[in-house]
Amino acid sequence: MEEHLQNFLAYLTTERLLSPNTIEAYGRDIRAFFTFLEEKGIGLDGVGKEEIFSFLQRQKMAKYASSSICRRLIALKVFFRFLKKEGVIGKDISSYFETPRLWQLLPEVMSFEEVESLLHIIDPMDEITARDRAILELIYATGMRVSECCSLKKKDLSENFIKVEGKGRKERVIPVGTKALASLQTYYSFRKNAEDNSPLFTTKSGKPIDRVTIYRRLTLYAKKAGITKTISPHTLRHSFATHLLENGADLRLIQEMLGHEDIATTDRYTHINDTRLQKVFHSLHPRP
Image (tube, rainbow, N blue to C red; front, side, top):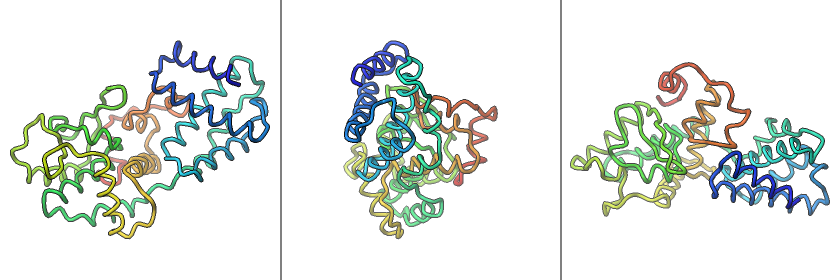
């Protein structure tokens, strides 16, 4: 099996032109699946939907992040397509990766009512609470990663859009809803002298905020709001995408705003909505 994996990684390097970090991550994901198959005494040609379900269920029980589980799912899908193309296996099992049952293995997202409760519990009465409200509103409004939020500069925000530098230093522009913009304006009423090149969000000491601080503040407000689920900033990102999808957003639109690339842009992202990005965003997002 290792030989087939090496051929696959070479394919990702030479034909898909993925970054070394991404290729390394996919290699780890597939080797984890190999370990699972060896425990079960199953070869690559014996993999079916039950093996895939069982493997991902194990990942969930081991409390892997939903982003890690999604990446492993995507890596396995493309790996098995590669094996079929190369004639290593005789059956195309890619359809097994599209079932609702499989995606239900992922950790729960927050309901819209829970998001509302979380955001409304934060009273922006001073710079810190105004900052916290603005951060959580912005992550839910845009689906950006918490690391992307931490690295934002004031100059990155312009009218109804925000410029985000994602993985691989690739930039994307995301529309921002009016409620998130209002929260940002409230926050900056406490930082009137902030320069354009200064961090968008700072600590009490004026340093750029970090992901640990955001996680701790989010956990505090979730407890106050009576939310019993275990949530993180990624939960807001995942909820953003799920709520847009439930309201009819095209998957390609969601992909663009989340900044997903390469393997994540397979068959699931083939139908591009012709409507302008901002118009669709404002008509579909529950907090425009």
